[in-house]
Length: 252
Image: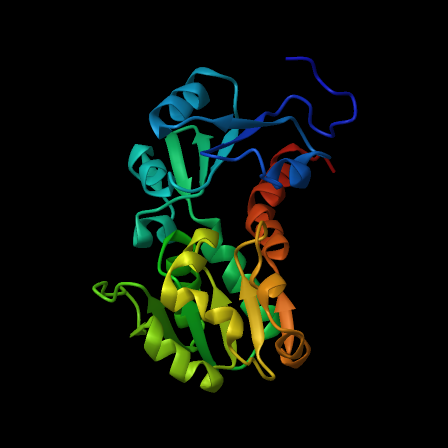
């Protein structure tokens, strides 16, 4: 590997394990710091073995491998242990440690934009949705979780709703967190979400490839209180790793 003299820490190496990930914007977040590779493999095991065998300091992990990442780690932080899902693996002295920085990202964004307890509707209960719902609940917000299936029992205070129930209740929520996958818009109940008439609400979204904002009617866009898109979520998610790199490698 040829070191790029433009990197601040060329001796470090990071990567992203996922499938497919050609569209990922994660490399841009770290381009000023160190090399960042896309490890695109149809199985997590292949990507994980590449991580172990090479000189990577850490790897991010995206769908559909977050659960596998957690189970391949030697130990984990509290958030990853709570959801049994991880989006960051770091080589520590004691072994591979799993982290869930989705939780940290949402918690940070909510603290910045919703300082007082309110009602939050989380759309989706996959990896990002679980982290978002937990972060909101732990901050003292009232949390509704809307998903295509309602069989889950969250390990934190929250109310589960069907998507049809969410379509009735969303006007009562102060904040909507959109954590459904992009392809979910083909589902009949999910397809109606872009027709919702948002009014004076904060919208926080995990997706950046096909954001909900692009599907909303002009009136709904204008009436939404604020929109925090997937790129902001991604940046907040990356910040803990950036902070750690700076802390461990910067000499004052």
